[in-house]
Structure formats: structure tokens, C-alpha cells
Length: 456
Image (cartoon, rainbow, N blue to C red; front, side, top):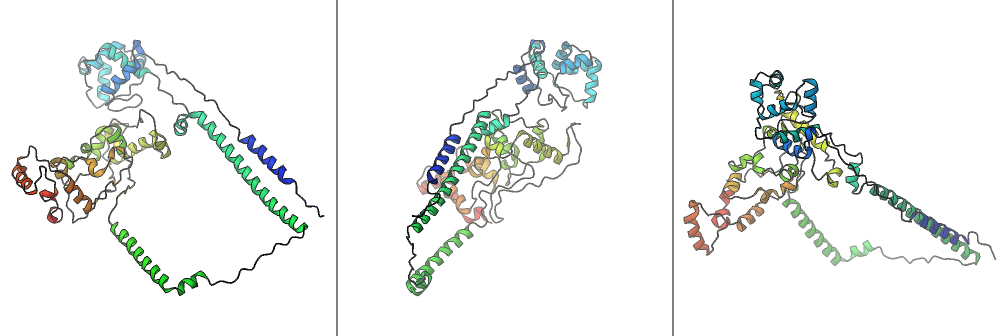
């Protein structure tokens, strides 16, 4: 009897695979390193920096920042700087904050120096602030800036800090071990097949392949069947017509269109987080056919003071980090705004060197369709979200509704006309309500389906 090589290697390979799997698939745990960081506050004169921050944001942030010059000077460590450089005591700050114009008129040298340096911009007087309130503000300006841990971004992105990183490494090791075991199993099966063939040859067993009898190719049999050919042709024609109709019906419909703008503008931050009303920026929607594109001066009403993005108080979300929406990204977009409008951050003035911003239009109706924003917004009282969707949740603005004729007609059929307090509608509403036998008239019953209302 012939000796078959590698006959007993199955058990060896299987045992080796099991050992490797048990070695790498054992649970790997990493202890979470929790580091409690306590921030120390420098409280000048016993002030409360936490209260001072709230007072600063409420009264000072419009004109001052801690570490950069704005309408007024930077205020970080202002008390110690004035004491060391100018020899001024805290009582001077009390008088200056409560009545700056009085200090200037008294002939104070430093007060007049600051007044001249900042283009004679008068500082708002705060007589209602007590000495304790000012102490709190000074404590906030003297507090060291919080240092974010180096792993903060990775912790937010992974969801659980170092423990998540360790868990990720463990998962990679387990995945590698499984791939290795799978490879060993494939090799083992190949060896089993080879060994079985050797055993068959050693025992004189011949494996013969049966010759399959020749058959007519399926395509030739199909071509000879006229009924199947006719049925298939009809099916293909109907299917082609269906898809051609569907494609042609989508021509001119841009639902979901979300172009990239030259300056990234987040409706989620402005309308969502900061609760800015849509019509503050798109003010012409109240009185005009078009909602209008806000001028850059509207942006500068706020961003003259908001020169950097401080971030969501709850921290960046995983989705924001994955898309690159970091504080640095948003601050960079504010710099683009400054460049376009010609704003000199250092000098806090306009240079006159402005550049047009080529905004990409998102919502666009055909020229033969008439739509008036003021008629819907001011007269009908329709909310912007009815047509434009939840803009307060959109990081990138996109076309929410199809804006088709059928979509508008459905809205006219379902929307009741508001006639309360409008004498213009009283008589016609009474007559049409009697005609249709209803209490409330829809826009369609009031003539909203007439061709001439929208096409001219």
C-alpha cells in the first residue's frame, strides 16, 4: 500500500488555528483614564469670574474682546496692565466704566489718550454696574484661558476618549486574528482536497467526467419561440416608455439641490443655534416679490464684533468633526467675509477694497411662473419652513420642496384663507362660503387654481 504524505497534518493545522484564535480573540480591556481637571480662576479683588463672564458678554462683548483689539482695546489682564504701565488703581476703572465721558472731560491724560487712539469712539456708560459687578468682570478678564486637552477632538470623535482608542486597537487585533484563521482554514481545505485525491489514486479509484450531451443554446431556443420574443419586446417597450417618462418629468426639478457657496453659511448655526429670524436677513420677503440675497453689511451688523467662532456650548458633534466643521473652519469663513467686505480687523475700519461674492442661487422658478413672497409671507402668514423646509437644521442649504405646479396646486387646495380682521374678504367670503357650503375657504376656492393667477 502506498504511503500518503501529509495525511496527518489536518489535526496539526486545526490545532494551530484554534490556538491562534484563542490567543488573539481573548477579551482585551483598557482602563479608562479619567483625569479631573480643575480650572483655577484669578479673582481680582475677590471677584467671581463666572459671574464676570456673564456680565462681560452682556455689557462688554459688543465692543471688546479679551485678546484682540476691536472697537475698544483688548481687556485681558486690563487691571494689572494699567497698574504696571500707567500706575492706575482699580478706583480709576470704577470711574471709567461708570462714566467714561466724565473722566475724559476731567482732563485725565490716559483717558484722553485712549479716546484719541480709538477714533474718539465714546464708550457706553454703565452707571448701574456696582463695584462688585466690576470686580467680577475684572476677575473674568484676569482668569487664565482654559487649555483644551490635546485629545479632546479625538475623544469627541471616538465618543469615549482613550478607552475607545484602546477598544479600537483590540478590535483590529481580533479582526486580524480572524483573517489569519480564515486563511488557515482555506489552506487546510486545499490540503484536504489534495490528500483525498492522493488517497483515490493510491487505491486505484479513477474519477471520470461524464460528457454532457450537446444541447441547443438557450438563446437559440428563445429566438425560435415567437411568443416569447413578442412578449419580451412589449415588456421592453413599456419599460423604456416608463423610464423615459420618469426622466422627462424630472427635467427642471432640482429638489435636493445643495450647491457649495463661495463662503460657507450655516443656517443651522444662525437660524438654529442663535435663533435668528429668517426675515432679519431676507427682509425683502415681507414687501417684495423676491426674498432677496442679504447684503454683506447685514452680516457685518453682527460679525463686526464676532470675529471668531466660539463653538457650540455642548461641544462639536461627531458629524461636524467628520465633515471638518471645526471652530477653525468657521473662523476661516468669517475671514473670507472680512476680505469680501473690505474690513480691516486691526484698524477696525473699512478699507473700501471690497469684492463681490458670487452666491449660487438655489431656488429658481421658471420665468413664466409668478410667485410673490410678500403675498404669502405678509398677507397669508405662511412660515418660511412651509416651502423651504427645516432651514434651522441645515448646515448646507438645499432645495427642500420640488416647487412643481402640482405641488403648488395641492397647497392651494389644502390651505384655508385667513379672512379674520380683513374687511376686503368679508363680502366675497360670505358669498363663496354660501356657494360652496363651507365655513372656511381654501385658496383654490378663492381663485387659486386660475391659470392667470400664476401664469402671465
